[in-house]
Length: 466
Image (cartoon, rainbow, N blue to C red; front, side, top):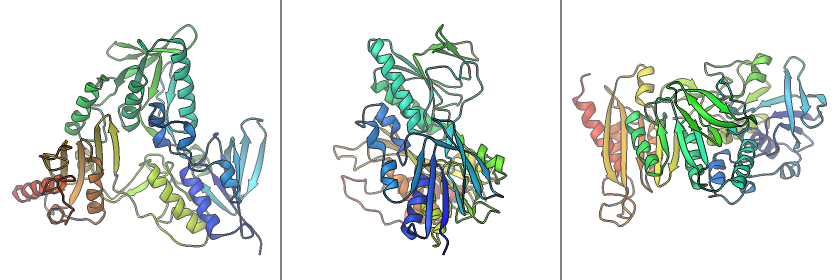
């Protein structure tokens, strides 16, 4: 029997999870695996980068789950610092460039996995490519930012170091906190009404207040127009459409990410509205029998809204890889979709959301009610009790749960998992009220805050017009 060859483009979560799972199912005598990674690192936690930058994680290598040497020891031919620059789908081959030598070569495949990930959004602004302007998506990005910070800190006293973060999504808010921890005066500029656009503005306001308490200056409705540079070509300030200038020794882009799919587009692979690759439930690229794709470069089905969306998260990427590897290895698995669950933390404030925001529900054409409650994370009399706010959306006529947002102290965020399960199961808020959740004073009030919000949502559904 001829040995098949699997080629994997991209060496992080989805790509190497796929390669590892395929190797579990097929030994080298059945399947040769060649993987290409353009960066210096594989199989790492990009989500941990802000905690490394902020000093909560001791070193870069603690974020690496598996090194290139460990992958190679499992008979995966992993080629680092090698970028695939062309997919020849008709010929069943890829063209790769060694980024150190510049040499190029073709590699044939029987099966192909495209796991090219995402890249930080870089708006086309004057000065955006200047030294000292950093996106933070890969561990290579984090390494460059850390080098830049150490250079600044080696030449300046702790007082007077200034950082501007452009954007106030998860990465922007987390990087702002990390920079504060390093002794920087931090300004966050964002275009929205409140930070954390993944939340509704009323819940984002709670995050805004917490950032202010940390000493982070947050400027809402700020449209960045230019990165100003000094005589050495290094970023020195950020200008906005209002005519304001914010001095900066370093600029971090936290605007978000977009799927890295130019390679797929040029090869003619199908892309969705957000530019992500379209796959079926087995993560096989639509219309291409021997091509799979997963991770931050694909679109996934939003189970609540019923449409395809780009939701880049490491949790999804690892699951995609498992599904892909099973298919490549001759097994069967599917990735049915997501409900959009995410958590984050700003100082002592925990932030969580799942399902739809108000604007998502409106875009989906849904009629809905909302319910917002304030409670505590434990019994109110227990010493560790912390304030907690829960917002819930429910479909007006049916009472189907549509979304939950949670902002509060320690012990708040992971309660969103209750809602994530309920959303996946298609439960109504009335059914959520009846959930048999664990109770003891150190963990929860008698009525868990999620159940209190569901009870209020039930009342809103019953009192709303059909």
